[in-house]
Length: 248
Image 1: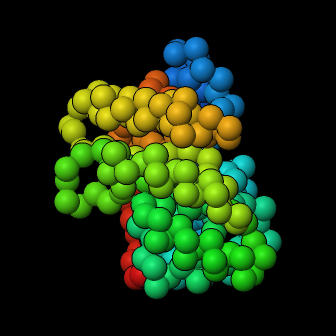
Image 2: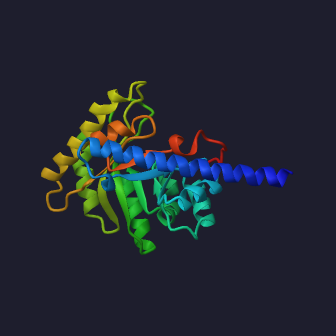
Image 3: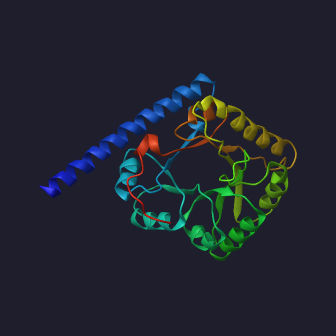
């Protein structure tokens, strides 16, 4: 009976995740079209931190291709168990320097580069293993102490330095606004990140402009899309609340 119940639970989780993924895609499409954007330009990052491997497999079987993780060791374990899946792994949390060696082997993209020291260390590590990855610079959009990221005034220098590195490919900016009960209040923060990207392209990055904006989560992704998001990071709306704690 326990085995049967467990199997039925897995089937119900698979169906729930597939249904939620369908709903999310429809919402993304409708939101994009409502502001004259191409739905295909918006990439869904399924935030799978502290979610079990069967949930990842269920989402992958329903066509989800990108999974976002906050903790390097957790992501490494999941990647090992999902080698048969044609998916990409993105680091969306703060990357500690002592985790760079492992992160360089696990992730296909890192959304949270916030210092030249981190970028240089990651680039050297990637050179040693003959690997290159995409990256975003995380910009601090508010004064909240809990939010990491580079200060906007230091962004041009960091962007220029990263573009000179051989094994990091700078493709965009990432930002996390403060939480507001009304998601519409996040619009100025998302707009500011878009303006920073455009200004970088007009000045510092004229020869190799960037196009991506990683911004927007379950609570505010519709607003983020309207303000130009190209990568949205969705966890709760897809998987529900966290159901286990794997540690860091």
